[in-house]
Length: 127
Image (cartoon, rainbow, N blue to C red):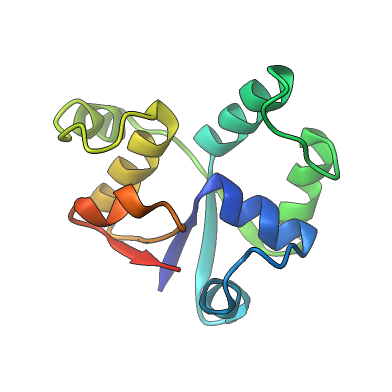
């Protein structure tokens, strides 16, 4: 199955944080699944770290290398994703999360996240 990792799920997985649920860790570590991190996630991390709203154990550049070491693929943003964002109801107002929702919908991916708003959309969420 194809998994799209939300920002916190990605960081917690790469940093070995206990806040990542066992179910999430299990599906991410399952070699039969393909894990993706949206380029929007890197944008989200860059903005939040520059504003002092997020601290990570490693730099954004090093996170990129950790992705490759862990077999996590970078997923691009396509025009179709942005079109779908404009059609989503506003259950969730965070622009980065709305893009992840649209990507998961359009690409038929499972979204790995603890965000409770995600379940209000027609996507499959694992936590």
